[in-house]
Image 1 (spheres, rainbow, N blue to C red):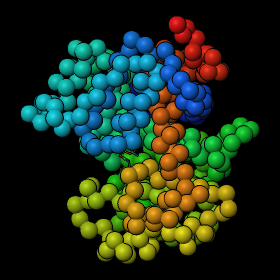
Image 2: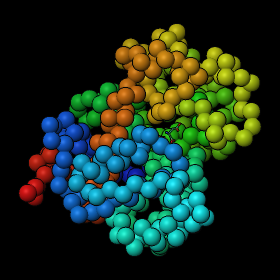
Image 3: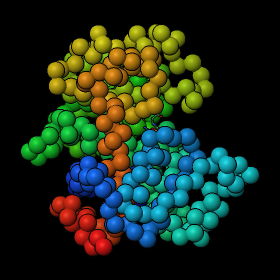
Image 4: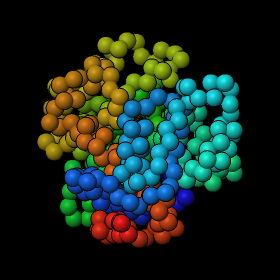
Length: 328
Ligand code: ASP
Ligand code: CP
């Protein structure tokens, strides 16, 4: 694995290796000294053409915890606003010796273009491209599910039932999750109003439904999606109130979930729209934990892409001692 562009590129072994490595990284994050020397001397560039809170901060924390040098680049305030192209931006990063580029871009396919155009040698990590994919989000979601739904034994999500609910049409989180969860053997049901179900969803490895209440009763995890008004150029539902009534998660609806089921949201949330505040803050909500896990998962992704392990997809660090090997 040289780049991380799509969860569709990951085999089950790749995905399990990433999740197992993230487990090791999480235990590092729980130590008083959270830093490992693994990526000392390497440079990670965070190249964000779209706004972000969680992804940008957690990639930065992840790179710093691995002792990499981090350069943060936001398109706002850069020469992109003077019309500089993606190619020239990439050539600039290449000239500065970036070993990894974490890119978020409004255009679907921009990270793949960067990885394949030959402008830059760095490992490319997709941090969200248009409404296409957000692979590290799906990995942190699977990681969080595994910790709650398969805490011991083979840690497998095989046969676990996951409902992904809401604005699937505009969601890169939904696509990356659908592909990854299918690879991991989980059963995904997408629930959305007909207007927000993606075209060609028949080719996705998922079931679909328009009836949230029925799906909730048989779900192990429910993932609520933000209604992405910034990507909507038309009216997709009659009113916010009508949307919440049919597709929002409130406490009455949450009660339909089995006892053990968890409530997830990638953030940022529209509280009161797709999820009520009491559900978001309830004991069944793992939303804050998803953010914590995001750092460990991104540490694992950077480690595997940059440490030379990328060509040895079968060698997971068995213990955190392996990760600290060579520490001065
Ligand atoms: N933060 C996630 C993303 O960038 C989800 C969202 O914005 O709704 O895709
Ligand atoms: N979940 C997520 O990607 O959040 P940000 O948009 O804040 O990075």
